Every structure is written in C-alpha cells, then in structure tokens.
View 1 (tube, rainbow, N blue to C red):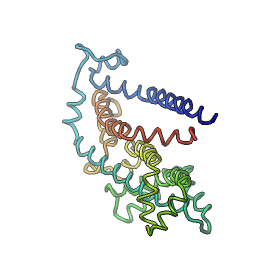
View 2 (view 1 turned 180 degrees about the horizontal axis):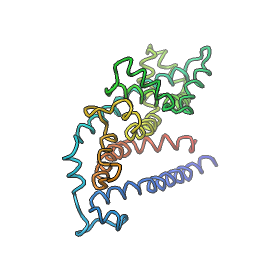
View 3 (view 1 turned 180 degrees about the vertical axis):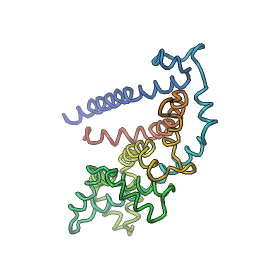
View 4 (view 1 turned 30 degrees about the vertical axis):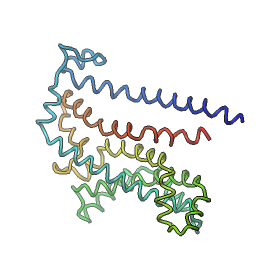
Length: 279
C-alpha cells in the first residue's frame, strides 16, 4: 500500500528532474539558434539577445547553401545514422535476448566481454580500423562508417536491452511456445513490443554521438562525395578566420534531426529511463 502511494510522487519527481535537465541542456541549442539569425557584430556584442530589426541577418544560411554541398552532407549523415541505428537495435536486441533467455556455457563471460566495449573507447583502435578498411577497400565509403558505428553502439545496446529483457514474463514466452510460435516470432511479436522504451533510449543515446562525430568521418571518409554534415561544416572554420554566421547556421540545421527524434521518442525515452525508479 505504501509503495503504491509513493509511486505517483516518485513518477512526478522523476519527470520534473528530467524536464529540468532537458531545459538546461536545450539552452545552448537556443543560443545557437538565435545567433544563427544575427549579424557577426550582434553575435559578439549581444550573444544572449534575440535578433531584432537591426541585428537580423540570413547571411549564414545563404553562405551554407551556396558554399559546399550541404544537402549531400545531410543525406550522407542521415544514411549513416539511420542504417547504423537499425543495425544496432536489431543485432543488439537479438544478442540481448539470447543472453537473457538462454543459459549456456560462458554466458556470463560473454556478457562481460560485450560490456568491455562500453569501458574501452573504440577510438583507441583507430589505426587498426583504418588498416582494416584500407585492406578491404572500404575507405571513403559510407559502409566503413556504418560498420564502425554499429560496432561502437552494440555493447551499450546489449547491456541496456538485456536487463529489460530479463524482466519480460517467462509465462508469456512459454505460452507462445505452447501455441507453436518459433523463437523468432516470440522475439519479434512478444518481446520487442514490451521493450520499446528501452529501444527508444538506446536509439537516442546512440544517435547523438553518431550524428555529431567528426573523428571517424575525418579518418575513414574525408572525400567530398561521402562527407557527413559535421565534417562538411568544418569548411567554414579556418586557421585564422572563422565564418561564425555560417558555422552557427550549419549547426542549427544539423540539430534539427536530433530534436525531431527526441520529440518522437520522448515519451518512450522517459519511460525507459524512469522504469527502474518507479518499480
């Protein structure tokens, strides 16, 4: 009874904390957006002020659209991000289901091995990854980035999803087996719909570093036809002169997909983060 009385308050507190942190996190985004519509002088004179009649300018967006192939960079980033997230969620969920559902020799060691990918940054193996891509002829291709980002996101996906899948009712899965469902149908029809909040959480946590990454596009895919949006935006940053209007405009347009994804999955994301707090 007491636990039931505390649950609404706990849920409200968790949502309030998340909303507060969201507003704090969105403040830099707000600053970037308002400054992308200002003149250079207004950016440095009043960076926190809203654009007005004197300071309003679209020169940054005009420069971005004229200099460089922004839409190609955007398309490359979308392809890499969407395909990588699809592979991460698919293979991560399948591996998590196997680890959570079946008991086999070295089950625990396999889980620990996959968890090492969270603790050891993949960038440590940049030289080996580059040599591998060169030997397979995948340098300057989007496939190279997709493979690297999939490998980078799988450990976290398996770690999060396996914990959620352990909480799926065994009675539900056994009932499906009694009804003649195969393991694949049990996985796709019964288990995946129940772990959608966790899937949304994994998707958001992986999309942001993939979309914003500069390191691997610079190393593995620097050619013009496969540049990502983050790498393409670097053309406006020089050693001695930086076109801040263009940089802020490019960043503002690059933020949009992340914001759209967050809005779409916000409810599932909050449920996935707070599920452990309200049990």
